[in-house]
Amino acid sequence: MPAGPRQLTGDTVASALSAALPGAVATATAEWVEVEPARILDALRWLHDDAEMDAKQLSNLCAVDRHDRFEVVYHLQSMDRNHQIVVKAVVGEHDDPALPSCYPVYKGALLQEREVYDLMGIRFEGHPDLRRMFLWEGYPGFPLRKDFLQIPDHHPGLPKFPFEEPGVQAR
Amino acid sequence: MTTATEPYVLNIGPQHPSTHGVFRLRVVMDGERIQDMDMVVGYLHRSMEKLAEERTYTQNIPFTDRADYLAAMSGNLGYCLAVEMLSGVEVPERASYLRVIFAELQRIASHSMANGTFVNDAGAWQTPLMYMFRERERILDLFEMTGGARLTTNYMRIGGVAFDPPPEFFPAIESLVSDLPDRIDEYAELLIDNEILLARSRGVGTITAEDAINGSLSGPMLRGSGVPWDLRKAEPYCVYDRMDFDIPVGRNGDAYDRFLVRLEEVRQSTKIIQQALDALPAGPHKTDTPLALRPEPGEAYGRVEGPRGELGFYVVSDGGSAPFRFHIRAPSLINLSLLREMAIGASLPDAIVALGSVDIVVGEIDR
Image (cartoon, rainbow over all chains, first blue to last red; front, side):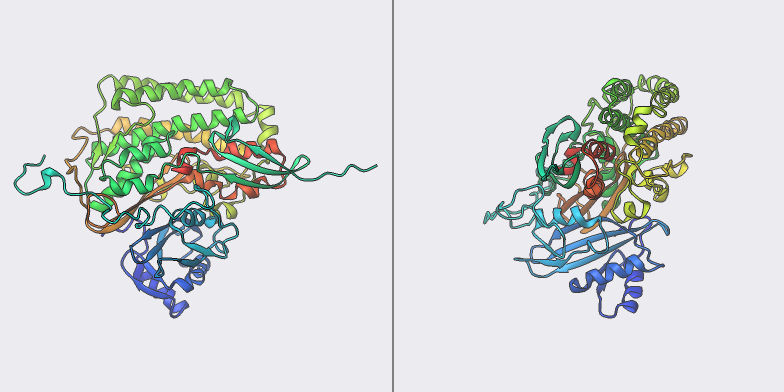
């Protein structure tokens, strides 16, 4: 799987991170490092402050619903060293997910965490202004969740195209 | 005798010329000064990220030009780069050059719009905007000539671009590129030392470099604060590593510096287009990619330096023909992270200028 052109591998980040904060790293792959959700703020603060990691900017924050758990993905950027670090936190609780907010470290999380809360329903504890953003207060449910539509026979995604069936000539 | 004042709520928008779209500000005023500000967005929310989960990778390309409708080419490009990263599709060299040409044309068109509406907000009512629309019009004509559409271009494809430009495209773009430097000098003469613009925008909406980085700002907002950060240099995609251009930066981080950065970026884009036209190789403009593309399970974050900043696409595949997750990292939204801090304590006209200098596109904020 492709890592971005200037991405620090998850293993590199994981070994540095677990040396500084024992027990913070859950797993790591070549692409990303997964951090224990309770330690996410500590981990991000360390990555932000460390001279080698230098993750001064939170360039992207979003969440993925994996049906039984949520992955919150942080794309961090170092301007001086010109590398990207991908950090993930997996929230196992699917009904009322919560995660510490990273606003104390990155002010840029203000609107991005609000967006994730609005559409995915993850509460960021410690966020100064966690309200719905695109939808209104009281909107039923969180539309980006995979179970949002509650249709029993709804299978997200697409069926096979006719030309993909065996024996049918495809362009 | 003393006059007691009490704070009052002032509503701006959602329909207001200074909000550049369907965007609402709820401002708490104490006399002339802003005490608090809250932005209300979502009027253009079309739930693109959810809809994309039900469409093929190719069918999702039109969403990317309807997000930031003033920079459709940049949106197309960022998304196609992300899917190409995810699926390992190769792009022919001619297509990479064409992508650079169209992305830079789009930057000029978008910056013309941004600077025109910004000086509009600052009081230069309509005249400079019409000057800048003159150039934007010619660029949109080039888009129409090539792809058939002017605004929502839907021009890039996974593995290349949809069409090769027709023969009449090349004389038209050559004449545009040779005209542009003079036109930019004309704007510069008209606006750079303009007393009213200086009075209205200098020292307004100032952001320090540290705040700009920490607040996730990107694009001219970040460079206006003096951070020389441009993805075209830092993480060159397409063929930007072969192009010779400079990254303009501001000194004070105020609205005026952002205006200057955009003006200079138009000049640099002209340079890039000229180089790309000179080096444009022959060959195919697209690789043959299956319509029902099924990338291996995985994820990719493709990003480009759009006119408004880092335009990123986070695409997750579960092996199906539609993305499992499709997220747009919208610079218009994230550049507003510091709007409240910029506005508090300012007067209302200054806050309008500060908002104008952010250069938002509401279609991209709401998606």
